Image 1 (tube, rainbow, N blue to C red):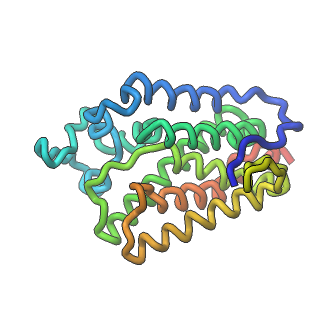
Image 2 (cartoon, rainbow, N blue to C red):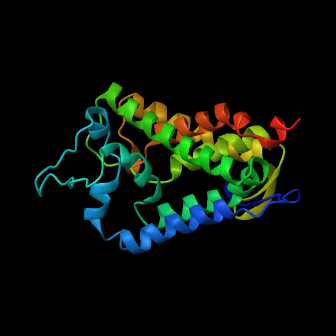
Length: 233
């Protein structure tokens, strides 16, 4: 199932923050990552679990890659959230953010939504770092992408809007399904792949599934704290 739109009939706020996040991700990819060609930028500003665990910048030689990080290594937990590995990675993430993010911003308000997004992204990256520490794998493989933060958005969405209709492409046609079905299938796939990685399989295609799961769980747990409607009732 590939979501393309959802029910926005109750929206009263313009999703300025969501638009800004989408624009920021695109601009970073185009101008700072050079459409994915600037490997030096990627290696310097993505999150490296080994660096986060030690608090120290790790610089390998040319053959080993990893560039010097000109900011404190913990800052890469933020910078990596606005970087992507390729056009398909960027396009997929921005589509999910476009479909699901505006509803949460409408419900939370602009500032709370931005804080929710960033916190979910940080917790998602820390989930990946923690898993790398426990498994001893991928400690020096750069991790990047908005997927963790967007997973948090989807976790919040499924809790606040489980019955919202989501239009998805399925078996060559467009159908409307409840959000709990569309996003439930998505998180089930992340869990299956994440368990496969924990069982010894490598993370297929460099996908940090535990960051997806961590972000989704963070969204589930935190969304009610940022829910303006609930706070005002």
